[in-house]
Each structure stands twice: as C-alpha cells, then as structure tokens.
Image (tube, rainbow, N blue to C red; front, side, top):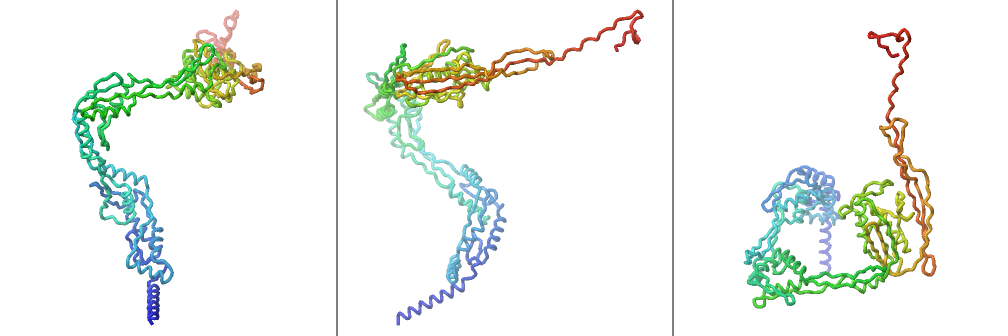
Amino acid sequence: MRAQRLLALTAIVVATGVALGLAFAGSSDRIAAGVRVVGVNVGGLTSGQAVNKLETRARAVANVPVVFVAGGRRWRLRAANLGVEADWAAAVKLAQRHGDGFGPFRGLRRIGVRVFGADVSPPTRVWVRALNYELTRMSRAVGSPHRDAALVLRGLTPVVVASRTGRGLDRKAAAAQIVQTLAGFERGRPVELPVTLDTPRVTAADLAPAATQARTALSGRIRMSLGRSSWWLPAGQLAALLALPHGGTSELAIGGPAADGYFKRLAQGIGRPPRDATFSVLANGRVAVVPSRPGRVIAIPETRRSILAAALSTTHRSARVIVTTEPAKRTTAQVRAMGITSRISSYETIYGGDPNRIHNVQLVARLIDGKLIAPGATFSFNRATGARTADKGFLEAPVIINGEVTTGLGGGVCQVSTTTFNAAYEAGLKITDRTNHALYISHYPQGRDATVDYPDVDLKFVNDTPRWILLRTFVGSYSLVVNLYGAPIHRRIVSQTRPLVETGPPPVKRIPDPALFKGQTYVEDTGEPPRSTSVRRLVYTASGKLLYDSTWYSSYRGEPKIVHFGTKTRPAPPPKKKKKGPSGPSGPTGPTGATTPQ
C-alpha cells in the first residue's frame, strides 16, 4: 500500500510539473520573461525586437559622457570616442538561451528565470589604442610611486630617509570597468575606478641595522695593505666608497662610481693585463711563437668584501687588496698547435699616387694584418676590413667607379686586395671569389688584379691546408708586401697568361667647344681600347698530382677618346668693293654722294 501511495504521489508531482511546464513554456520565438541585457528588460520580445530596442538605446547614449573618478580626479569619456560598440545581436542570442528547450522543460526553466532573473553582458569591441591612451593619462594623474626608506650621509653622519606609500590605477580592472560602463546605458552617476596602494618594500625600521653599521664604518680610518706595502684609507674617502641602502636595498656594501674609480686607479699601479700567445716573423721567413703571459689583476669582489669587513669591525680595521692572475685567452700550447712555422708565399706591389691614396693603402693593410685563417675556413677581404668609412679614417682618393676614374672614399684599397690575391695565387690556395677592375691597370700583373667594393664585390680564398695560415702585411715607403705563413705545403704553380688583346676601338666622347669654329676639332685624349686577357693557373702537389686547374678571365672597358668639336660660327666675309670708272662711281648716289650698296 505504501509503495502504491508513493507511486501515486510521484505521478501527481510529474503531472503537476508537466502542467506547469506547459503553462509557462510560451513561444520559443520569444525571450523568457525576467531576462535583461545590461539592465534592459527584453523578456517577451522576439530576437528582432530585442536587438532593435537595444540598438536604439545604444545610439541614444553613444555621445553622452560618463564621468569616471579616481584618486580625486574626474574624466568624462564617451563610448563613441573610444569606439566602444556592443554586439547586441550576440547578446540577444545569449539571452535566448535562458529559458530555451523542449516543451515542458522550457517552461520549467522559464519559471526559474522569472523568479531569479538573468542579466546578460554583450560581447564588446573597443579601440585599444584609444583606451590605453586614456588609461595612461589617468595613471599619470593618479599614480605616485612608493618610496623605499634610504640611508644618506650628511657629512659623515648616516641619516635614514623615511619611506612613503604610493598609489596607482589598477589598469586592468579600470579598463574592464570603463568598457563595461560605456557599453551599458547608465549615464547618471560617476563611476569610481579602482586605485591600488603601492606599499614600500623597505621601511625605516628595516634600515636600523644598516645605519648602525654605517656609523661604525665611518668611525675612523682603516689600513689597506698589498704585500709589504700599506696605506691609510681615511673615513672621508671610505664614505665615498660606501654604497648605502637605497631603491629597495637594505644592506651596506662597497660599490658605486667612486669605488669603481678607486679600484681602477689601484689596477693601473699594480695590475698587468694578460698577453695572448702570438707569432713573431723572423727575417729568414721562419715563424717563432711568442709565449702567452698571465695577467695580474685585482680580485675586486674579494677586495670589496675585505674593505667592508674592516670597516664594520671595531677592533681589526685592516683590509687587504687581493690580487689574482687572469689567464690569457690564447695559450702558448694553442698557438703551437696551429702549426704555423714558415712563409708559404709572398707578393709585393709598388704603390704611389697622392697622399690620401697612400694613407688608405696603409690603413687597410693594417686592418687585415695578423688575420688567422683556420683549416678549411674562408678568408673574406670585406669581412676582414668592414665598410670603408670616414669614421674609420678612410680618405677621398682616386677610384674607379662605373668604368671611370673619379674620386671616392677609400681609393687605393684595391691595391691591397690585388696584392692579397696574388699572395694566395702564389701559395696555390683555392680562390673562390675574384673580380677584375673595370679598367686595365698596367702596373698590376696582367690578368691578376682583384678589385673589391664593400659589401658586394669581395675577394675570398680558402685555407685548404691542414694547418692554420697567418696573413701579414708590410708597408714600406714605396711598396706593399703581403706574406702568408703556415706549414710548408710544397706546391708547384704553373701560370699561363693569354696575351692582352684589343676587343674594339676606344669609345668616342664628343664635347662641344664654343672656342672652336664649326668644322674644327682637336683630340684631348686618345683613350684606350677595351681589352681582354685570361690567366690559367695549374697547382701541383709535391708528388706531381694536379690539385687545381683554374682560369680567371678579365675583360676591361675602353677609356673614351675625347674629341672637342667647334660650335662657333665664322664671321661673314666683308663685301668686295667695285672698281671706279672714268666718269666716277657707277650706280645711283645718295644725298651725300656715297655709293649705295647693292
């Protein structure tokens, strides 16, 4: 019987629920009663009606400002100025989800919405840059950073400067508040934006121990010592070396610009920089290794701690300058392992010209001097020298640009690249990048000139030996020598140079000359014809095996024949006079009796 009554009761509850659900189900095309979108009631409306209602309200307030308040300051912002736009269609779709479903289930859900209500916030767009601009403006007006307690000296007396609490705008929360408010329809009351407190990290109480230490440190002088030498560090000088707590620190230290200067002066007297192992080229072409030498430097962190410990002591006020050694970056063993023992090639070119050109030759020669090329590595002339600029010391000198001799920055650099090319050529190394000059230059070896132009036109060769190669330059009063040093490679070089042939007549450049009569000409420069040549290099190993068979082709532009031609018009010849007959001048006469020209 009890089970029957429970089953009957359950049936009544289900039936009642179904009846209520059907009674409140309403139409699925309409939003459930009790649903609001940012406070606006849209219950009972269709989606189209709801969107229209919301958009109408939004247009009405788009240019109505909202007053925002923070830290006693006020700002008036409009939704239109920040590009705040709510997606009302999306908001209505969200509103429709409250109370949707099938039949009686929809009704039951709508009863809950009717009783408890539901408020929907729409997805919103905003101009982020405009919003950030306003937030920055507000932050600057409201914000004041905290100030940590600090220790300062007045004379030799340490004084604690109290901390101060700051404040700042909570940008993230404020941004959400501004967008949410401007997307809504409320425009009556000011809106308070969140402001946070910026509490100091270090207070005056935190610096009490450091103040006590500072008073002890400045209570007298300390004795400095290095080996058998010693000297006094007065309290006034020690005060300059102290780094007092500030900016969030709470401990005393030795540091700051004055301390850096003090240690620098000490290093100049007792320090010695490390010396890397290097090479010394001997007169007979052999190479000796100059051993490395460790440096002697002040161990600054340890010396700082020694000075601070002495300063904080009331009984043992002595500090040591601690010296340590600094190893060389390139040791003697590393240099010997490079295997550079003798000269493997040498080439010399004669230079001249104006002083600027000679200066550039000497400058770029110094830039590549001492370059080390690892086995398998490529030497790049442009990478070794970098851009040829005025701030590096390069001067204006004659240079070939677009096939014409003119003046440019770095003129003379190609003398060094040509000499370097020929040193690599004579060593039998693999040359991967070489370009001839635009014009033929007779004082360079035929077909073996090499021009460069940073960064596009380069000279490159490869160290294809198992040992390192050292490049050295020697600049004399009239010549440049480039030597390559390494392990003996015993290569045999055979060169075959094709004759220099003319490939056409010189181009003609005609220049009008008003000093010459028409039909007159004279030749200012006979010019040079275009030419071509090639050089074939065969490189053999010591055993006679052919290692390389390379040919470099060179084509040189012609230099124009300059011809001046006259443009001046010749004067007309004077008229010929007629002979007089026995009866006087022939022809009619004028009033004065002069002959009238015909």
